Length: 210
Figure 1 (cartoon, rainbow, N blue to C red):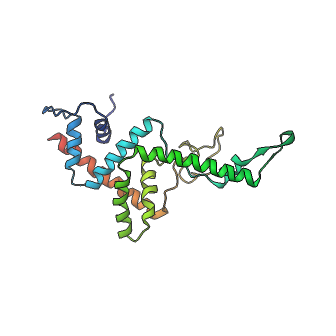
Figure 2: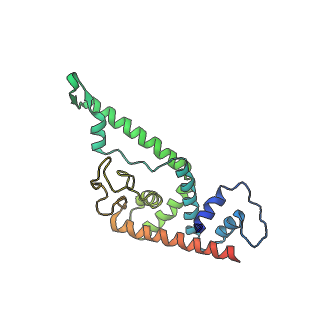
Figure 3: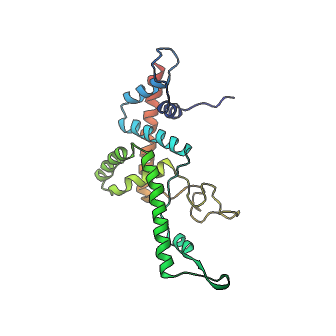
């Protein structure tokens, strides 16, 4: 049985299309999906569809949302080998490890930001929503990145520790999924994002059927 292509997948493909000529045929083409998304009443939902399409393209290039370096990661990186294989940590090695991991994080985050061109605009809209509800606007970008890539970064979504059958210590409550930023508030916002994107997808599909 052929796998059904979702509206979001058709839209994502359309954003990468090299042919955007409107055919005027019964079967909608790439241009029709882009036009239909532009007609959506749910403007924020359409922007989320565009952001998701950008993320799909970024994933194909191997771009992932990086994890801020933890103290444990810095300590592990800071260990230096001295005589007879003995390993130790020094003040200098801790500082060097911190700078190295932070630079790596900033480099990877920069790749994400360059790939997600619509992220600043979408984040600004979400910040307004958060502020109107009495929440911190700083949650906007982390929640959007979590919405795009909810997998646990420690186990890469497997729910297991590396080279082990033991459960991942980071996602024990929901195996394979990262903790939602902002706890309960964050979960409400993620549900809101899903609803907006779903409505926009439904409107796009409806327009393309006409």
